[in-house]
Image (cartoon, rainbow, N blue to C red; front, side):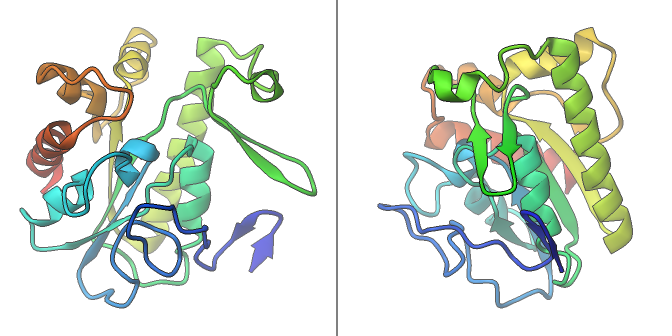
Length: 220
């Protein structure tokens, strides 16, 4: 089934140069064992830019739990893109858990009938023009819409769903607007990086280890 850019068949991405990816373009195992697995979704930090194989947050979590963790993180992803990827797993067996590590809330997918562009908040005017008039309230409302779609998918599949954030600023925004909810964990990936002195744009191995520990203690 496919409507526009949304499908219930696993979306394929080009392999990312310099990283070990499966045949579908994800930095994870081949999709050949659905017996006992979880899905983890997010952006480039979840993918593991600048982090060696087997040191990403998904790999470090997998080493601590009994489930196989499929890392579906893709660089540049918005919350919408995470939802689009999740729904493309509609025909696969249900996971034990979906672990959403939500990208920066200002990000969007911009699409027309011919193409779809990930708007990441870069300084390129060609992209920022699509989000120039967005407000914090709009970002929160858009986030809650995506949360609904994820929760609905998990309810349909009969699996657990747990929500984490990449950005400290987005956690503060949600708290300031009073828009927190059960199974939303607000010590962000960025918080864990800052806790150990990691100031990089992409978080290092230590931050991945610390965040994996936090996910394990929060939902396993």
